[in-house]
Image (cartoon, rainbow, N blue to C red; front, side, top):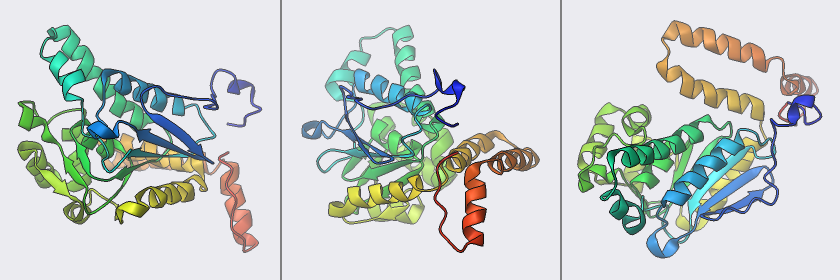
Length: 281
């Protein structure tokens, strides 16, 4: 949608001046960088950071200036999951209605990540456990290091492995058998194994993890953002469709993309033997 459209009012937002309280946010051109910033505790989540992250991803649905997002942890770890003292302890004292409100809120974070149109890249180093592993799983792409350790450790604390969509999403990334291994055992998946299993898309040295992830995000951001958003939507939506329904849905999606100026720019650039400059409209 063009910024001059009368529909922009109320349907488009800016993150200029955005300063979250419970994590860091930086915008590098068209790439947003989220940093979970509690390195002394391996970047655990709190009730407040769950909610603030959820709200950011919901807002990103209306932000054209951000075309891709990188998620990382400060220090040498990604995220250790829910904070033991600030979340796990209080949960043991809550009533069932409050517990359900909490688990629905955490699930809403994953829903918001999957619904936001920007491709999400998780930059994973060190510990990536519990809800941290879920955030990595819910991202579209994952870059890790050989020292990264991803663990869906819910059964280790007496909970089911079916947390925040894990039993639905994880098998689609690595397969049913491998997902079962991780969700029943709660064991750590090392970087090399995670790459071999397809959980990680790329494996790099720790010192270049963020730069590699941001560069990849910048390459994506330079592409046709409307078409990328459509690709992400169809990848998610087609999980619940039969093949015939998926083919029809993709026919409609592709016809819509053929109406964009980016599609026409790509043709004109190809005809002129030039590289297209995509603008997202």
